[in-house]
Structure formats: structure tokens, C-alpha cells
Length: 539
Image 1 (cartoon, rainbow, N blue to C red):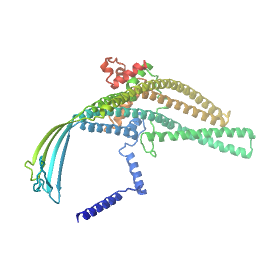
Image 2 (image 1 turned 30 degrees about the vertical axis):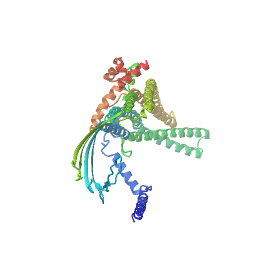
Image 3 (image 1 turned 60 degrees about the vertical axis):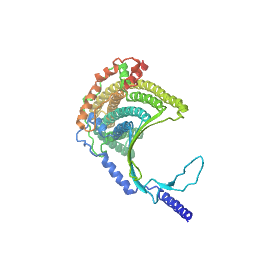
Image 4 (image 1 turned 60 degrees about the horizontal axis):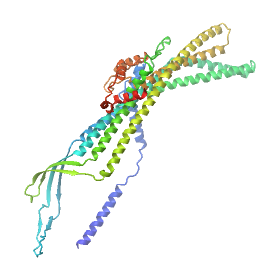
């Protein structure tokens, strides 16, 4: 009767398993429209949460401070750095021994009984005697300590690699900061141009549109010869189109700046402006090009990142060498079992276990060769980045020199157009010139003023590119817990030095100081070494 019972039990078990697997099948469940609306409201509220509203005209240092404090690209870089810090904590714990607590309760519906058979050279009959040494139900608990020296060695080098990844994340954050500063600087000066020119563009546009409507009436009524009227109307249409494009460009500039500093796009964003005769044009760079190259190769975040990556790769080689060693485990435990048949229900154990993967004898050399090749690739990649860095620094320097000349030319041309506009205005009032000439020169003066301010924007952008290309930080202090005004003050101090074309003296000294040339220093792979190698390659 036991076999049919077992067969029925087997069928029921299979059926239960099939039903369980069917219940675990998951089908796609799209979010509802209400959930999407909730997401939109939550995201919008989170974007502007805990922000200081713009209540005064915005300066460039404050715009940069707001971008660093509220821009989500920078916040993402900060969170990635925090993640690497926390993973370092996890990697440090991985080096510790394992201490496992195991407890349980077991029960069965009959005794765990068995029969023993004595084996002798001559078999003899004996009576079958079933015996048991386990209670039907009993509790057990054990605390086991295990320390594998191989795992410790691998974990040690993994922790060193993770420590370098923390530093890599910080260098990537520096790169994000430099790019944000460059973008904010460009957007700010474009917005400043809009703030200066919009009050003049809108009246000029209204006057040009009024003249255009009047010329249309003259053309329809044929009050003047057709060809001069059409040429006049064509010129007016060209000027109106030019003014409208200028107006559109100016309107977009503030929206771009608001997006970079994470400000509400529908809120007013006043820009702090200097007086018209006091445009803040930077001076010529006071540092030589070779000094800029040396400082750039020392401070650039991408080169420092590669120097850390080289150290990560070298530790990867050592880690793979450790993996080829035999594993030696030290084991200790304390145990308890409530089984009443045991003489000693509590006991302690200790032991040593050695293991070795024999496949490593064949695969080990290939694994080490692959790790060494990875390290060698990193060295070549760093040298390639060094060449790219030198090119970028030289290009940024030449662009800045060219932007200075363009700004000087644009400023001089604007002065000439302003004098022409005053002369035409005086002639128009004396009826010696037509109203069209006044409108044309007014548009020309606006255009040259825009070109002058655009040249200034290009000059400021080129200056920012120079400092970004050499990796000089506009702000290197903490962000969380720091007031916005304090950040703005620190950034303003650094930007004032930039406007004078100077680098911080401490940075120049650190980058240009002679480095030791010992073999040990060359092989350490620290960020300082990476910069020094790059300088040697540049020379």
C-alpha cells in the first residue's frame, strides 16, 4: 500500500510546483496616467526644493556658485563620488574574517533508525538490531569563524583598487565642475548682452516695423517711383529680419542660463551689469605658454584619473598573482545541539584547510599576461591623453589671443558706428538725411554693439577655456553645508585673479617644482608621477 501512496504524493507535489511557477509569471504593468502626473509634480517640486531664490541682480560668481550647488549634472557627479566612498567601506569589510551564526530546528515523524552490520573474515548470522542516536526533534546552533588567507590577499588589493576609484571619482567631479564653469560663463555673458541690448532692440524694431508699414502704403498708392520704393522696402525688410533674429537670440540667452543654474524658467532673472563704458574685459595672460602646459599636465583631471587608473591596473596584476596561490583557511566554531543522545551537547572545533585550483597551473600565466597588458594599455592611453592635452592647451591659448584681437576690432568698429549714428541723427533733425538712413544706421550701431558684446563673450569663453584646459578649479571647497554667499565670495576671488590673466602662485610652484627622479618614485604611479611623465613627454 506504500507505493500508491508515494505515487500520489509525487503527483501532488508536481502539481503544486507547476501551480507555484504559474503564479510567479509576471506581465508588464504600465504606469497609470495618475502615477505619471504624480511623478511630474514630485519632480518639479524636487527641482526647486531648498533653493535660494534670485532676489538681486545676478553676478557671474553667484551664477557659478548656483550652478555648482543646484545643477543636477554636478549633483550626479557628487553622488557618484559618495557611492565610490561607500563601496570602499564595503571593500574594507571584505578583508575581515567570516563569522557566521547558524541556528535551526528539525523534526521528523519517525525515528532515524538504522541497522549496523559487522564485517568479519567469516560471515556469521546474527540478529537484526535497529538503533537510533537522534531525537525526533532537536535544536542546534553554531557560531563559525573562518578566515581564508587567499581571500584576504585578494580583498586587500581590491580595497586598494577601490581606494583609487574614489580618487578617480573626485577627478571626474573636478572635470564636471570645470565644464559647468565654462558653460555658465558663456551663458552668463550672452545673457548680459541680452540685458544690455534688449531695451534698445525693441524700440528700434518697432520703429522699423512702422516704417515698413508706411512704405507698403506708398507702394500701394504709387506715390513715388516704384524702383526706389521697392529698394527701400527691401532694405527695411532685411533690417526688420535682422532685428528680429537679434531679439530672438537675446530672449533665448536667459533661458539657457536659467537651465544651467537650475532656476525656474518663468521667473525673472536680472543680470548685474557694469556701466556701458566699463565693460569688464580681461587682460592678457601673464603666464607663458610653457608654464601653462606644465601646470595643465600637472592638474588636468583626466590625466590624474589615468594616473590613478595605472595604479589600479598594477594592483590588478598583483591581485591576479595572489589568486594563483593555494588557499589556506583557518576554521573555528562553537556548537550546541539539544539531541539527548549526545554525551557532549556543546563543543568547540578548530581546524586548518588548504585548497588549490589545479587549473590555475595552466591558466595562471595567461591571466597574469592579460593583467599586465591592461596595465600597459593604460600607460599608452595616458601618453595619448598627454598629447591631446598639450594640443588643447595650445589651441585654447591661441584662441584667447585671437579673441583679444577680435574684441579690440569690434570695440573700435562700434565706436565708429556710434559716431556715425550721432551724425546721421543730427542730419535727420536738420532734414539733410532721410528717416530710412537714420533707421539703417541705428540698426548698424546696434549690430556693431552686439558684435562687440559677442566678441567680449567669446573673449571670456576663451579665457575660461584656457583655465579649463589646464585643470585649474574655480572652486575647490565643500558645497554641502556652505552658504551660497560664501561660495560666491570664494569664486569671485579666483575669477578676479583669472581676469588679471594670473594663476594662483601656489599652483604654479607645485607644478613647476623639480620632482625626484628615483626609480621608486617613477614606479609609484601617483598623480604627481603622471604629471611628471607627461611633462617629460611634452619636452
